[in-house]
Length: 333
Image (cartoon, rainbow, N blue to C red; front, side, top):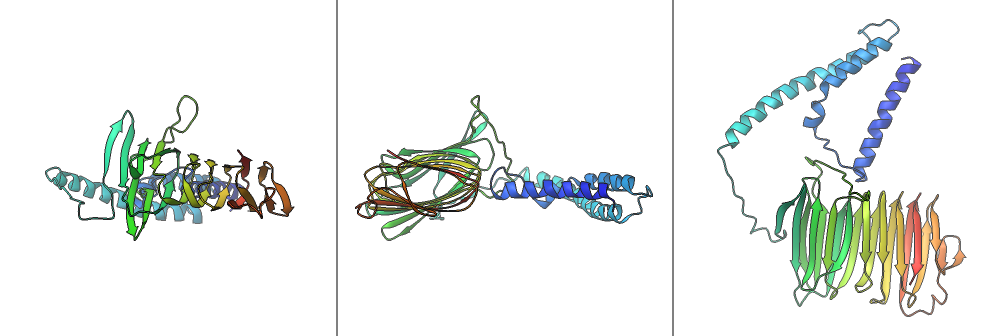
């Protein structure tokens, strides 16, 4: 294959690699089902023609064109057959109405779905019971603005306003005096994604969480692309794990718990952590190409910073950071 062919296929691989990387890190969401991919089989015929054009002999009898045609033919047959099957299924399902009752599933909390303008609205809730002393929230999602408010009567509440069809799922589990809440985006299969912005160029997908201040909280966040603004100053947070992709994270911590452990793993993210002056704080940081801004911290050694009097402080916040090409800012308030 000549140099022009190498450049062409190199560009194709770069584009495909970027799309797969963006999907895995939740920068955007694409439907990668075989059915959707098969619909683009004519592109292979076009590429086969391009390969023939760049072939020195201008012949379709070359390895690249033959390979593309070999892939295009079965994909074309599959698409035709699949369309026919889909039409038959649609005709059969027109007169069928199935009502599935999920009341027997104790691990899935009921929610309400409505539509507000061009966005889908969901509401979730987990009740607060007297025996719950500790709670774990596992939050997974992206492509949205995440905000936190205080819930007055429930352990957990969430309201989502999303531009894509598939939203979030909520599962809860009780272990003695501990409640585990899994609140995550639905499976990406079949998802239509719209990365909408409002007039101020902000993400137009919103996730509003409400938590009770009563229990001790362990928070585990996995945010792909999005904006997070959580004020935990009134919460008894014991453990906070943050895994962020291309996200903007703004976290305010309080002094309601004696020792708080914060683990941050990020890539190409902007992370801001605010800690109270009433606690001692330590930062351990690994990674390269990071921008650091630590307010009123003393560098102890390479990769380690502490506030004055950290060793003697009765309340401590420990930050362990593993990041690359990220911006980390830690302020005292």
